[in-house]
Image (cartoon, rainbow, N blue to C red; front, side, top):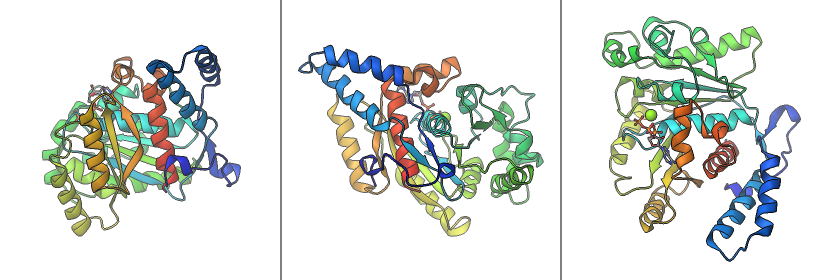
Length: 328
Ligand SMILES: Nc1ncnc2c1ncn2[C@@H]1O[C@H](COP(=O)(O)OP(=O)(O)OP(=O)(O)O)[C@@H](O)[C@H]1O
Ligand SMILES: [Mg+2]
């Protein structure tokens, strides 16, 4: 199913669907600007295309998954957009009313920063969950800028966790058990069931990433639309196969997202074509453009969804979120 096939009106009951947050003032302003623009100019055409995409998303219903979807956002290549994808997809889903938990298991703590969650050394964090069996319910914190979005932060202590985990019992299962226990706690407390859990992984294939693979049912792989994009991907897929064989038979690579796409270069188009050829069922139709607004947002402790909701980057992440929910 592609974004074009997603029905504008959900057929579910109101309890089963929520609606994408859309900015009608922006849309009205944009419409009036576009009406006065000459659409034979490249900028006019681009704006018209964006306005059409925004119209398509306006008030779009997002279905609640039948059960909690646990996705790990992984790629051992550094700087490909894992964290940016995790926090922005999470914000897009939560902005539409879905209940979302982000788990930051990267010692860099970038997802915690982008979601404006305290993660200095004294804060109880995912380190305490993994190493000292502290319940997730005691470390999650609400994202101050996005309703329905909570985050288990990472602190600097997590840097030592790879080594500390080695000698612990059930070292690969610790995150999975913590998430299961947290789901039970929410139920007991009468809190709503989580719709999505997104795990932001470090750029390595160590025990932290293995914990994420064991906890998740799905892998979301962001791929940077650049020359070395596919390098290392076979290693990642081999590792996932090993996990499927020995630790988590349910795990699938459900989603691949092309990030930092520069539409002006032939290279980006070639990379995209190659990735789509290899993974026709996994690659989302939505692609994330290279965008200054996306890269600026974290320095204001924000996602682009709140920093500049009318930007093309925010629009693209919303489209990706719609596609992800339509594939459950
Ligand atoms: N679409 C984009 N346009 C422009 N800059 C981007 C985009 N996506 C991510 N960036 C920037 O690229 C850098 C790397 O992105 P990000 O931190 O999301 O990657 P990562 O895979 O999580 O990195 P790491 O492997 O270090 O965890 C960041 O500075 C981020 O702001
Ligand atoms: Mg990261």
